[in-house]
Length: 199
Figure 1: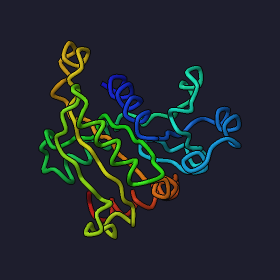
Figure 2 (figure 1 turned 30 degrees about the vertical axis):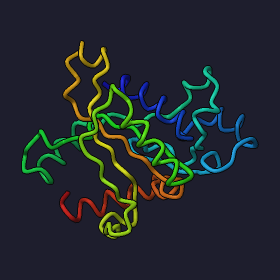
Figure 3 (figure 1 turned 120 degrees about the vertical axis):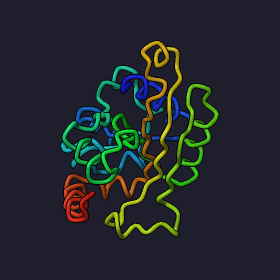
Figure 4 (figure 1 turned 135 degrees about the vertical axis):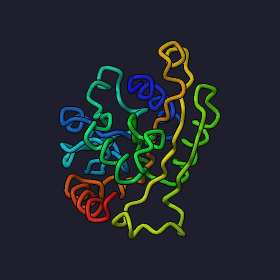
């Protein structure tokens, strides 16, 4: 399912000015030619080794350099079990972020454009949107972190053939300052807070 989600995420990012973290080689190549996302150093979901990563707009990454994008990893078995036990009363059906990806943006308008692209995609069925950018959202309980999390099912021919069309994935949409915040140290602080809360 991860490969299917990545291919869709590329499409949505390309029409909404979305950015991804890239490995060092592309970072040096692109460093002087981009602004906004490209200037953001940090890490995000699923990557513990990205503190020095560089975000580059997907539409500006050459085809041969796409292999340098650092994609989010599938949630580990240990964390999955921990989350089901701590947060979901052992109800596995509530675990919606085993397969996840993240896109970084320079503006809320770009996030809205991405959500519109997802909603208009006939291969995507949005299950839930959690808007942690809403001013009413209590970000203190998340250590100040905010994003928009879109839970969705993919119904591409490949997903249907593999019997994965009922699997719910998560797409995290982040503003670049929060992607910076979600560095390795920021993530460690979040894990400490999450463990103290028993989540």
